[in-house]
Length: 443
Image 1 (cartoon, rainbow, N blue to C red):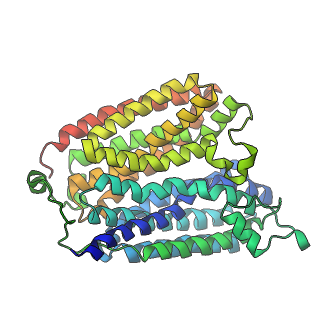
Image 2 (cartoon, rainbow, N blue to C red):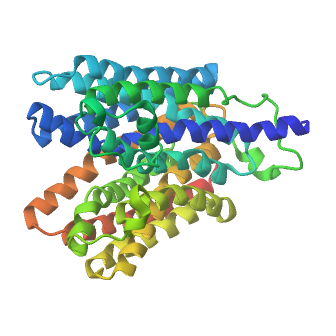
């Protein structure tokens, strides 16, 4: 390979980050809740169904998207995702009305979730193929943007979603740009939910299409300069198709472990803001001089930052000590953190807890695609990881629902976090089983 082509593989990572930052805004769905409820008088259950549809569509769509990505490459499939995501908001602005919550479910939920599913798998599959020497680290970098996307999006979106003003108080294009970039806190007025849907649809679709242009697969016979794979590992590795993969106990254990780990994390993260709010008693971490950037040092912001960093950190660790060992350590650390949360009181403890929980939760999204590539090959990684990722769809339903039910039953957060800790310990034990199964020939 020439030097230019070696450098070229890093442009794939850059394209993946651009795509993932936009896709990650799905986790900021809560910013839409209040404007839509105030506009249409909808209940909280009515609005939350849109988020559930989006997560379910995201997980399910990754299977056909992964298969298509393996056949025609990441650029075209990610572009399809960008178009679908942009259309979901544009159509939502036209169709959503007081008596039509189903329009939000179909646009933001089904269509938008499908757009995320199509685009999400592409950077992962492409980056792993370009970096067989650093699978964990590169996977972590490729998906780090998804963890940080909501953090960059939520603050500006909350301001722009405010009802618009008229006359001289209305936001101009320059003000909208400054608010959108997080530089300005705004003037107390926004552009309204409908105009915001149009703006976000155009920006999200356009940026994903831009990032997609940088995605491509390496040549069929490709090896990074100076890298020589372990002959024993190379001999043992096979490129399994999804049917062959699903027939293995190893794939089943990966799927179950992903459910345990992601369910525990979503159960906790879904209640992080009210939990920390009750502990802080309305106080804030952020000094006034930080302005709109203060969100980065609030508990939810800290968790989001370390969620992104955790994907890179645990990806790198897994390259050094292997995936199952990294999973076991990560889940044990997360389980102990959840058990200790009942005694968190000081600001320092809240900061450390937010960082630690975010760091470990983010690791899921680097370790499981890397492990899928290790054990079942990179040729069909898009399709194979799509099937493994359905575990996250299951966790996306179980985590928030079970956590909310435990809180409703007790009026306290303790039981939910203790249960989340137990699930982490089960995930750690499952990682030991994965380690044993991975030592056997696959297939």
